[in-house]
Image (tube, rainbow, N blue to C red):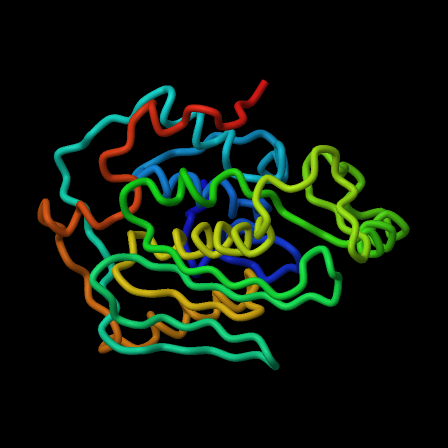
Length: 262
């Protein structure tokens, strides 16, 4: 058993890895965790055979389609949310991740890349009313061709192809079919943040802001939050509060057109 918790994260490049006290680990959990959080699933046991979660098409869409298509079981236990009471911020170089108090859950993100195919992108979303499903879940991970070449030369990322990531080279999109959204890159960074924040062990009531932030910085943000008891509190969600959480009120109509796993 490996707990899906912020304090079980082992710092590795390029993904989020969870590890237990016995040294058993599972990598690349962020897309799956984002799908669970975006579908309003707060209690789940994931069985996996292998060292990492399958990348599928590089997004969370196939997980979302499977969860919503199969349906969820509503439990009698109340939802406990983590309400942000004070601003918490962490920085590493030019990268910033921050949590501010808010009535619901919001994500704001900005990225800056030299490659013209990505460039500078900014987006802000309130995550209620199925926003994760409609706006973020089908956005794929992205990388530069030079990064792919470097990883392959070092025996890494050998399963990565243009079918499970958006690969860019300067101003060119190398992946067949191009982009799913003009700002797919920043949407995927928001998806990643959603998954990393889902390791808080409960939905967050607050506004997350990221600038050039990645998995490690978002995890550092959670560690900083939980090291400051006055910066948050646990709240039992009534119906009005629950309505502001991701995944509330979604159904099969919300997954129409999403990619599905084979």
